Amino acid sequence: MTGAASGIGAATASRLRAAGYDVVGVDRAEADVVADLGTPDGRARAVAEAAERCAGTLGGIVTCAGLAGEPRRAGSLLAAVNYFGTVDVLDGLRPHLVPGGAAVAISSNSTTVQPGVPADLVEACLSHDEELSARMADARGAMAAYPATKLAVAHWVRRQATGPEWAGAGLRLNAIAPGMIDTPMITGMRADPEAGPLLDMLPIPVGRPGRPEEIAALVEFLLGPDGAFFCGSVVFCDGGSDALLRTRDWPAAWDISVRDLGQQLS
Image (cartoon, rainbow, N blue to C red; front, side, top):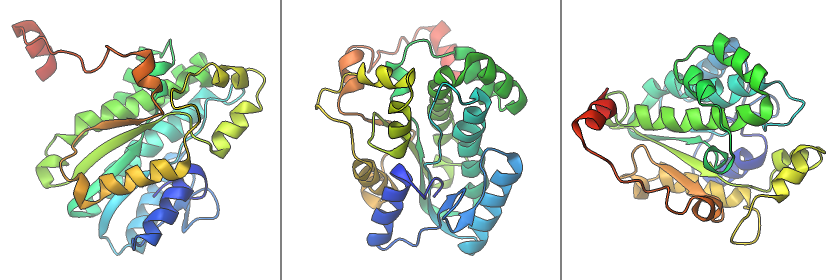
């Protein structure tokens, strides 16, 4: 599990350990594996040491590591950690998953409720061009890079989950899109004079931010046998924000005209 030292990752690690899982935590400090997922070398180290600690056999992978889109943070850092730090770890550890194993990535409801997500940055990430993604993320800024990197994670999960290396190999891959969760990440953003007021603009129909433990419960479900029929799902757990702001955008009907079918299959 990446991002295991704080926030959603810490809550999830605690819940899984209580349920009897042997959790190998990865983070920049206070973890079983100390590694910086913002660099290729750090990701390689995380994969190698995690695989060694589990003797090459994994039942599940959870990628919770991520950085908030704070205005004074470099956008390139978000691209490095949020996207590449997720997909490189999933790709690297996938061969160690046992048949029936599962992986859960953390996306975000900012992918749908935040306006102006830069589509070109999403595509740069999905092309796995880290240098280009870094340049584009810096040009766009961290506040725009955050939803772009999280949207890229969601699209990567949906693209990979149904393929031969995941579903075809008996492995499950899904994502969770949390809304505003009461974590140190949100606390830091609230203290920022630019980002803080924007958080207050997000409507949450249930009337409160989420708790890390609520996301942890969903992670445990998706990892376990009761989640065995989930494949390529992006599960929103956001107190109703996405449903309120785009009520009829999803589910979206599929136009199976010849032209659209060709685009879907390409």
